[in-house]
Length: 380
Image (cartoon, rainbow, N blue to C red; front, top):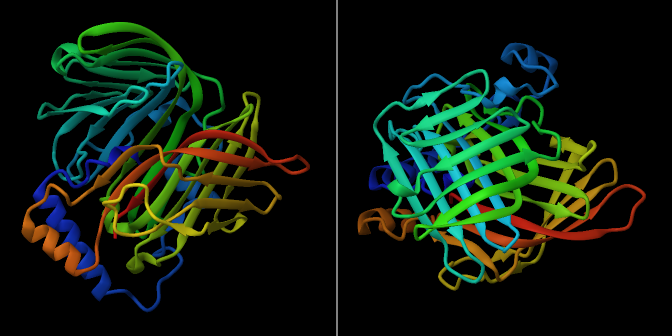
């Protein structure tokens, strides 16, 4: 859902803005908010009508959804677990970082047992974005699809020898919680999971060596009109496979000035149908016991599990593990002044992505286990 947010603090200006915003939020927490001003998932009949969408997801929803303007951001994200254990992550973004006025293509590859290798390319050129389906061209790189099938090309000649030509075929129905718009007043962050789980094939290039690959993959699409640091305090997001079931779950904690409340979302499906789609009051979220973070540089303990219990009797549990795909202190490379200001506020923004054991219980069935990834993003 939010993995492309990892470069959020990649320049000092944005890091300073984050500290100032956080200080302002601490100082101006409102005493009362209307339901519309609190962070919430837009899911009413009026919301659907106002946004011009229905309950059936259309391919146009994965096309460009925002004006090309510095007031909006948008990105298209893919990750794949290849049969040899390699993890590949690719995303195409416009005005992301928020306020950067640039287009971005990022690719990262984590071979089994090896460190993650990452290349991020920024472009001043406007790129090309279709509105009737996903068709993005940024520089020499392309990301195109129609909900059923996607092709992703990252040119290895412009990345120092790391690239891909991948095809993703959807195996599980697309998912959108409600309208997909998580909003607070007129601010919003939207989410569409075009491919909850699919079959990956094609080629991966590493060190200018091309190899054929197969595996499974995921694609989602985010857009909005506000930096997530303005409205989110932290979130958990996980996805994976449990037997024949695809599981996606997330919980966002709002910043105090937009309610300080939790917004949970859960989706479970097999290749034939959606089995669980729950959000809001239909989901009770709890955290497991605190444990030291596997990265010794992380100063705070972390919950050992994140648990979702649904009103229909189903439940999902994601657990952290010692195997970290990413662990990033988001202030590590910043100036002394920025770090000092942040730490004076008690802020230690951090992004962690784990390999995660998953447990799933469906009504009338015994618990079953599987695996996936779990990310925890701390903006406080």
